[in-house]
Structures are given as C-alpha cells and as structure tokens.
Length: 266
Ligand code: IPD
Ligand code: CA
Ligand code: CA
Ligand code: CA
Image (cartoon, rainbow, N blue to C red):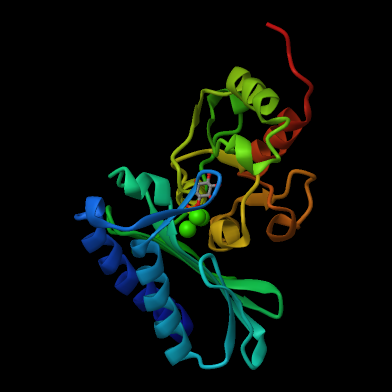
C-alpha cells in the first residue's frame, strides 16, 4: 500500500502523539484533570497530544486551518485546507485506565474530506483512508461487514450524558435497537467505533450529539471501506448537526428506519 505524502504527515503526527498518550496512560493517576462541561473531562494528556499534532501538521503544511477539540478553530492563510483533530478520543476511558481510546485526524480540502487517520496506541492499530484510495488497518485493506439482517448485527452507540442535551429520544432509540439486533455496544471512543465499522468488527453505529473532530476521519474511513454514513435524517450534515448513523448499505438503511420508530411495547 503506497501512502501519499500528506497521509504520511498525518500518520507521523498521530504516531508521535500516540507515544505521548501511551506514556501518560502509564501514569494516569498523576495527570491534572479538569471538567469542561457535563461528563467532558480534559487532562494534560489531551493537551500534550494536541500540541504535538498541531506542531507536526503546521510544520509540514504551514498555513492550513485547524479545528481541534481543545484549541478550537485556528484560521490559517489557506482556508481551502482544514485539519479536524481530536487528540484523545475517549478521555473518560483513558482516565479510568481503559485502553479504548484513539487519536483522530482528518483533512478537508474545499469542504470535502480527503484523508483520515485514526490511531489506537494501546493496540498499536493504525487506520488510514484517502478519498478514492480505500481504507486500511495497518497494511490490510478494509471492507465493512457483509451481514444483511439487523437481527444478526452488532451495533455500536454512544450514551449521551444527561447534561449535554439531545438525549430526549435516546432511550426510545436504544430500546428499539436492542429489540431488533444481536447486540448493542458502547465502547467510549466514537472515532474507534467508526473505525470498527469500517473494519467490519461492528455492523453499524449511531450516536448524537457528536462534534466534527469525533467523526470526520471515521466518515471517510467507512465510505472508503464501502459503507454508508449519514446524519439521522439520512442527509450529509453529520459535521453540522452532530448526528451520525453508519453501516453497510442494508444495515444503514435498516438502522435509520429503526431509529425513527416510536417506542414499541413489549
Ligand atoms: C467522546 C467520545 C465518546 C462519545 C462522546 C465524545 P472525547 O469524545 O467520543 O465515545 O460518546 O460524546 O465526546 O471527549 O473523549 O474526545
Ligand atoms: Ca472531550
Ligand atoms: Ca472526541
Ligand atoms: Ca477528545
């Protein structure tokens, strides 16, 4: 698999930040932690990883704009290119010593996602995708799972914190998905959830509310692995409205339908 120069830059940045996260994960009890909002923690580990990624990407491509979780939006001279970065996706897991977390870096060119990297340092799993070039886990080409029936499917989700809003309908959705699938999983890193759908480890995924840095790389990953991704209305505004539904063509369609159902009585 030949990676483009730009994807190599993203991989190097993710791996370097991953080494920093791995070191901090070994000493997690010594990290300073603060709360940004309901259920939203940030630690020195998040900030250090973000700094590394910011430095590496700015050095390789001076002037590109950024949208990063901790630093926010940074307007560069080049507004045609924007990096969308989550330096540590799964902070709550990380701070509890659960090795399910990742780094997510995406590149947008003229508003279109063109490259994505998701890296899980604890498992040394590197997911990469380029528009039109396929998706890979390390060197292996990815393909979404082929299961066609929702009743055979394992579906990932994120449970919204009550304090974050948008949770009104969640219990109804969860109840319906629980009743129609083989199982529901909540792993705690949306970027990894999407990478797992691309890799065929989970058949589908839905969550709201999410931020652009949680999903940008994962959206490209799934599409390049032959999967389907939309917002909850079936449109393409995942980055704008913070909702996402994913799977292969059939599972995606079935999941969208199930999520619209009123509560079923049992
Ligand atoms: C969180 C994770 C989690 C999702 C939350 C996100 P963070 O990101 O992706 O799985 O359920 O909504 O905020 O804050 O750990 O980067
Ligand atoms: Ca966060
Ligand atoms: Ca995140
Ligand atoms: Ca984060």
